[in-house]
Image (cartoon, rainbow, N blue to C red; front, side, top):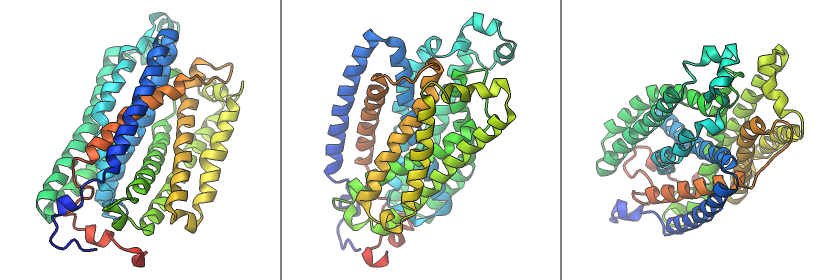
Length: 400
């Protein structure tokens, strides 16, 4: 593909479709926030639980995109060059997500039983965990997690902006050098984020693989989101000449890998805990394997793993953007189910319970997230115009 004398930045400007995406996202956010405002008066406790569901769902996509961005810098794979700006924009929404996390930090008493002195005093285990499960320390840790994620994102985006202005090969090496330790730091921070916000909902239970379980989930959410955005952008110029079926094939293979990774961690956690049969560990699964919740768990096994796995084995499906995008929507829906299965049984262990706010809150958070994502995406060239691997990554159908 050649651009002749056309200015690269103007040629690779985001298409008008991104403006329509932003407008639609703002409309969805307004509708979701209106419903949540009604829920604040009807059931404020449930609103906080549903808000937690919405926040962790969208945080998973942002931090997953940050991880994929760093993996791309480390591998220099052609699969990531043409959508690097999607990764960067999605990760750059993290400051907004921090602001949306504040209601959770102000509502700790409504979500976490370890904030109650009487509960802690009655449990020897919780008394040992009390120095860690301290409200001030909890808030400080969450602030630190976001600071690390935002710092890594800002650092990489600043170098990416410099690369747009000047074709300096050293900048790619610097981004690679940052990503090597960055992915390790990301892994630790992400693990403790999920320990704190989700695992501590049931503070007597613990699993050392819990954070890793969400590594696979975040990667899967991010790949599904990437496929949707890429299919959306590939319908307009200039991305219709940039993104080819072979790119979707690569992303489909990566999605299959994350499906397997998520399933491996999920089954490993279940097998180890269930075979150990220790009362303090098995109770978490007992809440989720009875009173109707077992059907949600079964749906995760069948629809979160088995069905996507079988479909993604097809080479033809992975090369058809529309079919792959439809599967991506389904995967994101199952990621919502997975987060629901993590949170709601804590508060409703004796019966399957799905509240309308469990839909409204993720829509509200997601609408704001998507609007910010679209705004960030259109502020810069839609591809990294001086990336040394761009020419190799951009190819016509003949190279598929």
